[in-house]
Image (cartoon, rainbow, N blue to C red):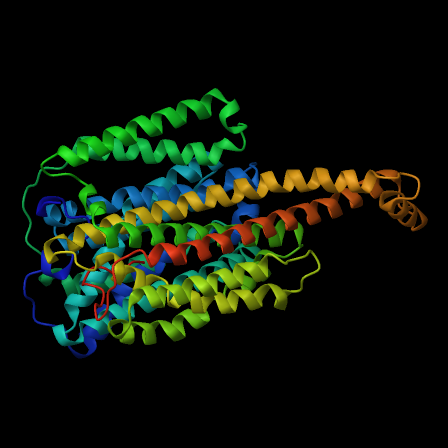
Length: 528
């Protein structure tokens, strides 16, 4: 990718040589940038435990409500490749402040949304304006520290990015129960305004040069069409009975044709918006695939878990958030250790540790029953944080190994685009598979209950409940609720087991990459 279309700015690419910040100014500037990062990453998970409440208040199903998450993720992924172009056109500081303030505005609009389609539309806008914020926050933090201490800036950035997903479910659950769901978006308003008020006075004198640039409009349009069509297909497929629906068939054709044209255009354009040729490098292709599939599985499951807990195990939004929050404990503790030692070990070995932990966690989860208590649900979540600490940094190191400095920004942006898109797809895939497997298990359970109707389980249960004074309608409702809980729990177990097997398979995948040792992630290569 040419310099004019770099996907994620780095200090070397976008910033002139500025004197590092010192003392209180450095601390205040780091806090301001970290606040913006926290706000952005928080919004990827804060709505997870609130989906049943949001969907119910807006008169929609929970499956339709998942668009609140996926629409933000896809829009964010689409806008990320434009960061490099926008930075060189408007300057990194102005673009960062504009992104933060636009995020504040769209968050406020999300809170005001009267219907689910309106909320989804505002979430799309929110994701679009959020795209530049993460790579630019990384750039500003690294440029604030002396070059010898640039890792300190990355450590602050990484810590913030890890804390936000931990706080998201817990904060979202508490706000939903004790206030109202719009406040999960309104909370961004004071945080974003505070971040902008702190960052602008400190960094406005550290603006980067600007110039007029050409943009690959055709490539961008094709990117939006194929990613958008594919996401709508994944979200609506289950509701429309997949390829028995003309709408789904049409979406599949549009996605495929637009994708093929996108590949052809990007491979032949002089200044492509996405440097597809990077996939010709073995380590980049394997590293990006592992990052994407791993994030798809991880994000899909952290969306599925609170839905299952709230809809079928009787958890409140707050309790579901408590069950999810510990995933960040070991991640926060171990990530600095992994970062300090990344250059000493082959990243394939460290990534293997991550995949083994994830596989074990999901294998344990696959034994879940409706009778599991909070601690039983929470324990795998705590352990999963250890796998998360070994996930991102080693795989980014592997992905960027051997990439020329002039292409590191393009490589980082493309791998992040693939990862974020995969995360959004993971939500749709996990909830669709869960629903389909639940339907199958429900049918099997009803068949078993109905066997030997005079003396079978159904007859015994009916007799017991009838003796307790329940009416026929009440007994039918209790039995159906029990069957649903069992069916959806078994379906969740199927998703967990499938995830475990895929993580095991990815261990083989990453060892197909070329051996790498003593290579730390390049600047600009850290993902959120």
